[in-house]
View 1 (cartoon, protein in one colour):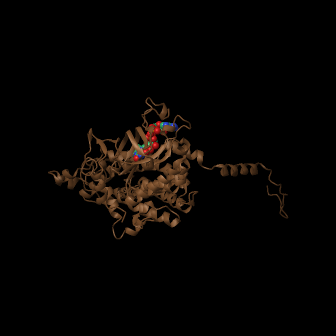
View 2 (cartoon, helix red, strand yellow):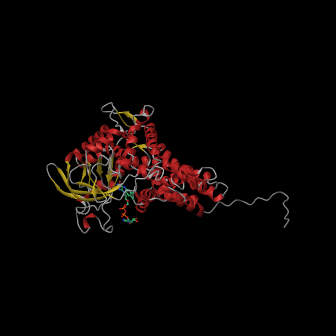
View 3 (cartoon, protein in one colour):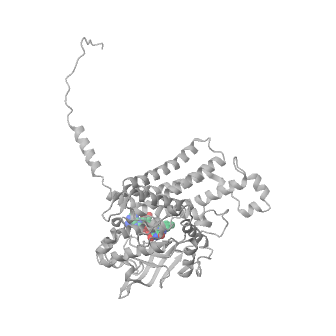
Length: 500
Ligand SMILES: Cc1cc2nc3c(=O)[nH]c(=O)nc-3n(C[C@H](O)[C@H](O)[C@H](O)COP(=O)(O)OP(=O)(O)OC[C@H]3O[C@@H](n4cnc5c(N)ncnc54)[C@H](O)[C@@H]3O)c2cc1C
């Protein structure tokens, strides 16, 4: 079976030590390092699901090349049923973390599905590039690799492009091309889940058409242990505490890293686009990759909103605040968000169309609407949790407290209307890890930005959405209203006497 087990994923990480840094030190083995040991085990658990006898058919399909079972998130959809099957598989992975792992491997598997199904798009740049992306997709599928990606240039001076920064090699750029491949120097910001197998270094930031930005316009993928490739991590929000104390941070802290390329050699067979600014600017949309990714993202949003609804409802029940009307309104707001996300997701499947590359592409407008609105919905739902939990979030003793000399006092004074003290504290610590902790704050930032700057996403929607039919309809209405209505002869009822 090509689909990997968790142990195979962990062994893979160990076999290929990468240049990974945190707190001023190089990480010798991420599988055992305190900042990474929990997240890599959470990813491993996802891989293991593929091998559970009851889930095997739901999570995998027969590879068209090897016939072996491979992960279903690699499926190129041809029918609506393919889309629905893939969504169900992705939902199961999302539910594992309540949606708090943004980088379950299906996220980038869907990007690869988009790119590879549109291999001709890369091939138009150079026929070898089309073959490369197709081969790379098959390689990742057959080896069940877990990918990270980096798209954004460093945030030094956003008022000018990468070529006009203080140093032209601040943003990763082609330093040279030689017989073996491209040599890349500079940095990219940011890559979530650096404890993955390989990195897709793809275009996203809009570049200026012309020679100036051409050295920044390319798409490649390389193993994370490629010489010269370095990951500088932020501090970890997994503080090494128990699942009782930090229910989410102790499991799902994915980590984000700045990626540095110190003259990294990218072999030619890993180059998918090169020096074609216009093609790079359009790549995610033109290949359908962004729609396939958004299908995964909105599936995750449904899982996450369901989880938030569960947490909010348990808070309401536990401290008996259900009599209050504003509480109903707040919980209803979460329900409305959930149903809206579901509706966007189902609409994207119902209105899916075969794209010019022959893949069935989920409809973009509902997914685009979902990704725009979730940047506001998610922070608001976190605010609702804070409004419901109030000072309860400050009455959350740790596991050590509960087991220590104050245990008896805690059991008495931390009880709730419908839960004993320990169950109340467990629930409120979970809600705290969503709404207040460093892990929770990073989740808010993630939902605001990970799929792009919301301001520019709205701008892109403004510019691309076909509003003309609606303008025409209103124009036609105004014309109709302005035309003189035909005069109707006055009809008097027989014997109509005026009564004043
Ligand atoms: C937690 C987290 C994880 C992430 N993970 C990844 C990852 O794995 N891989 C990856 O590639 N990226 C990742 N990202 C980056 C993400 O793609 C960017 O945050 C997003 O595209 C916005 O870019 P930026 O952060 O550079 O913001 P900036 O572009 O620096 O924007 C800063 C501010 O300036 C404004 N601004 C800047 N330029 C313009 C403009 N031209 N027009 C209008 N306003 C402008 C923005 O609206 C914003 O208010 C992640 C981000 C976060 C927060």
